[in-house]
Image 1 (cartoon, protein in one colour):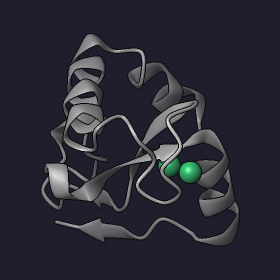
Image 2 (cartoon, protein in one colour):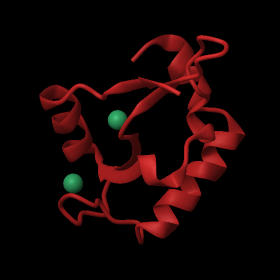
Image 3 (cartoon, protein in one colour):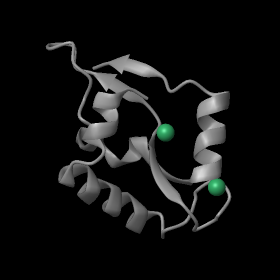
Image 4 (spheres, protein in one colour):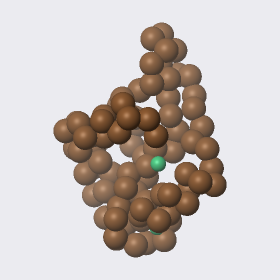
Length: 87
Ligand SMILES: [Zn+2]
Ligand SMILES: [Zn+2]
């Protein structure tokens, strides 16, 4: 994860979006059911075809976001590369 992206995740708009997803998923990891150390993970990254820029983290449709605990999240990133699409 690059530093710019990390900074974006401190944005209040991401905070709002993240809260929505946590609520939708009942504050539980969708993979193992844990409620400890929850992260909201992007299942895909999107690049806007017109500008060539990545979408801002909170601009994604909710279906591309999923609640995972820290352990499942880290494991997921080690085992799978998040696919990137031009949209
Ligand atoms: Zn988990
Ligand atoms: Zn992730």
